[in-house]
Image (cartoon, rainbow, N blue to C red; front, top):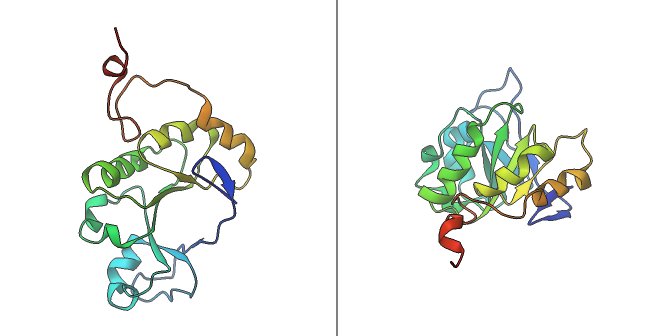
Length: 166
């Protein structure tokens, strides 16, 4: 199950994670809807580019611009949050939405917790895979923790002072 567009829904995508002994060009990408690491996509682009059931996920130390020419090809792009304190994924998401104009599903994976998803939504995420040990319905409540935002971001182009009538 995942949170997608503020609703809990079934998930039919799986995430390919490389084992320590795997290489990006040697790992076998299974059939079916699969999110592959960016480095696997870059290494195996020729064999994967005709598959509509392949998406890409970014590690927190990768750059959205590395997929700039091809990002619109994917119906799902994910960003991995390896630990709660690693916020680099927020920048990746913001760049995908604002600079690269990505319009497809943008999914947060990894160490995704209730405390984060409101802010993840602000930078462009619309799907969330909460950490396995968390109650997905509790995590979903995090999207409504705040009723008003002050700053402009991917989800609201105007700051509050421009949205209110005086």
